[in-house]
Length: 125
Image (cartoon, rainbow, N blue to C red; front, top):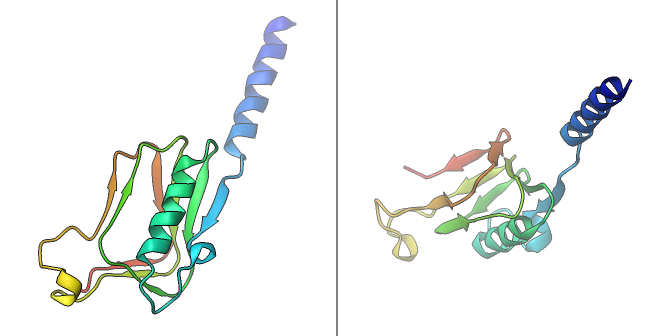
């Protein structure tokens, strides 16, 4: 009887964990606007999501968001999903000191990262 109860408990725990909802952090809530430089909004949103003690999701909605150089750094406190529905667009080479070969967007020291969505990283290259 004890073994049966433990197996049932384990199954319920796995089901609950797989259906846990991530806390959602939308870049537009931090000032990102389509067609405008949204670098600071992306970085602020990432920082909030990365500091969350529970699973989180950074959402970039539909639209073209201009991003200069950005390092999305960890370590994060919990698993994190980067959900790209829109377009993150790099500056033209030469714009604002951006040179060919520069790092545009990077994810550094992030464990349990999932990148999802139907959006585009547009490096303009």
